[in-house]
Image (cartoon, rainbow, N blue to C red; front, side):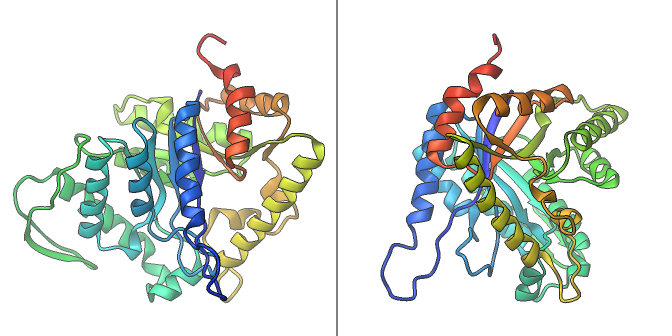
Length: 336
């Protein structure tokens, strides 16, 4: 199996002028450096705005620092929310990171889900899907066009442009799209993109989505590669039962905040997490928090339904990933 990190970093405002708001970003960079040393394949970073807790709002910029400090680990976004960005400017910035990293960028993109973010940007959530589709089409055209092109869409217009710089990876960096519903999974296969599966779904649901994606790829004469599917999983290698209990309680509070930020004024929301919002403990039902043997058994269960690439989230401190690398990863080496 292949393992990566999926997380965030914090740069909160300070009210008294003391402290270092950039410390969380520095810690994220150092954790990614350590992850490379330990044999992790990738590190993916979220994009969020207006949270009040200092979440990452400019992931490509932070990932460029990771790329500068590393040589092999892949750097990815999970996800950049396309409805909020000018797609040509985004194509240019992403291509720059791809070049500077030596072709290590994975571009995860999405439609967005938090009401507070759409409201803050004054972008109607009802336009999210159309904006996403048009933006992605422009980005792919920008990366693939050596000659000037024009675009006249509903949301963006460009006249006789050649987007620079070119990407290091050809035809372009891998595009990853989060999906869960059957129609969304089909759309990812149709676009030729890679599939991101969320951290809350059951093992059975994960297996069904992988099987559907495989069938949809093959129906389109696309060779299915299990490494084109990454499954996020809340995972924490605990020192003991008390450590696991404390970490799980901390994760539950994080999930509660995610749910509240996802709700609209009427209590609704489009996030995948909202499917688990009405049942106590549902967001923690399929976590892998515990001693190494429990983690290994949980990963083997995922492996049995077709998972080959896992993105660890929810407990990715340097100490936790060190324990994971020492006590869990060896069970999944090719000769194990």
